[in-house]
Image (cartoon, rainbow, N blue to C red; front, top):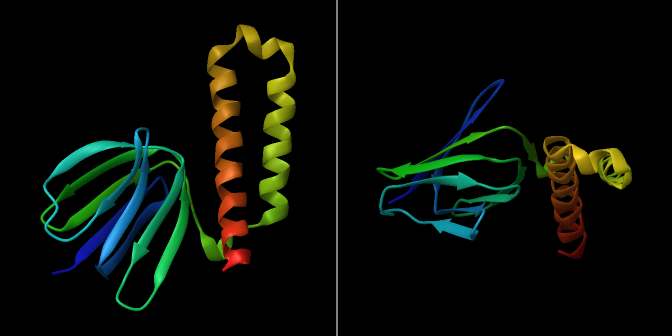
Length: 138
């Protein structure tokens, strides 16, 4: 038995088949999906998505989104997705610096939605940098 991963993004659909497992980040922690998993629906958090086949792994950094699993198909609806091969360390560092600078501004204290958005940007940049560091260590 194998899994299929469907990733729905604002600009299109991406599918990866013949997977042994899919690991995703939820607000409550990491979740692993194997063939035969019971149906579920849930929220996804900023973090890593790892799709494993018999001979390779594809790793991505995701923004927030939704997850549903049924009939050996893992479907995710995401706001942002960056493949490991497309990561840009300089851009991620700039994003993190910009988000931190915005968070340091006192005006954001009275703007909770803007503050939350900068926090998400910082976490997204940190996830990218963490995947780059993990790749260097391997």
